[in-house]
Amino acid sequence: MRETIPRSYTLARRTPRVTTRAIRCGALFDGTGTPAAPAVVLVRSGRIAAVGPAASTPIPPDAEVVDWSDRFVMPGFVDCHSHISIVPGLGDQVGQLKQGAVPRALRATRALRKDLFAGTTTLRVMAEEDFLDLEVRDAINAGVIPGPRLLCGTRAMTASNGHGRAHTAFDGVDEIRRGVRENFRRGADHVKIFTTGGVSSPGTTLNASVYTREEIRAAVEEAKRAGSYVASHAHGGPGLRMSVEEGVETIEHGGLATDDDVKLMIDRNVWLITTFAIFMHPDGIERGDGKNPAIMEKLRAARAVVDERFPAHLASGLRFAAGTDAVHGAMSFELETLVRFGVSTRDALLAGTRWGAEAIHATDVGTIAVDKRADLIAVEGDPLKDITALRRVRAVMKDGQLQHPQDTGDEHA
Ligand SMILES: [Zn+2]
Image (cartoon, rainbow, N blue to C red):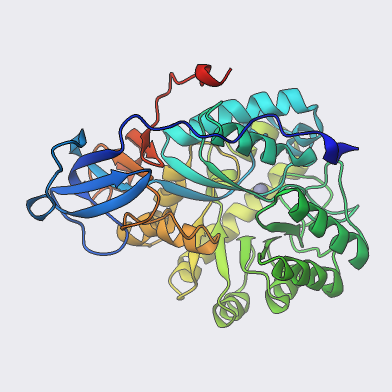
């Protein structure tokens, strides 16, 4: 029986050698107010103990000083939509999910390192087979491999003939209830459901809705009863509308959302999670499946609609946050695209940090404020003036610990 197999790692965290760190910031964007320059952030036991302008934030004599005085410091990115074992540039994303645990875990190890050192400190996983994401979450938390903090969806709810189906499928209200309950029993943080087709698989159309209203409602009810929520993969059409009407909290992609859909989302306080890189970045679907004419045709159509509609959607008052959809390390691209579509640089930074944390119920990250987890990144340049500075993340701190690319986790071997 699967459930009798113990997880691979003990969850004992490393005992930090230094309890207080003082970070000198050239400029600080804390996600709550006006940027301060210069500023100081004090970190104790992995949490923010104090933050403020350098002149009024004394550094305790016993603190270890981290000198980021030539850097723009901001909260670590919150990637609201990714997959740890998928690398879209390799093509056939569903085929990747169907592979054995070893190749998937090795890809995840490499991908999450890339995400972390590009500045992502929290990442929401939006479908993995075999509860792989829970095992990897444990490995990261135990210090075995470097990676962002993971919020795990485990097995997505998708229909037998639905988009995103690898091995597992759930048909009918009862299977969905059982599937969601089992996911939570195993340690899932939220529920992902596919309510429309997608781009990266041939044979499904973007607007087609496979699930019935009753099936979507069952997922929402079970998630709420467990104190969580549902995220719905929905491009547009009835699957998107039913998702919003039945109470899902985040709409993923929304590539074909109409003005009416957006109005309904605003009315119901639903978040849009934008995922531009998967459609537009050269390392997205195009690199992996560019030779498949059926997929490329859908991709071109989706790009045209996104270019046409998103500037208005993003200016409509709709709440939005950003996800890479497994284009690992591409949070900068996501936020650059928001700016290209008319969003201010300040709001783009919020979409990649504070708003993302709010959208995915990650209540203790997303801003640099007292008692939040000390997840900070040091950027070269000023992304408020030039958003492409986000490509130059030079240092990453997670839970108050500086992250080092060479860290092999040997002490846990
Ligand atoms: Zn996805």
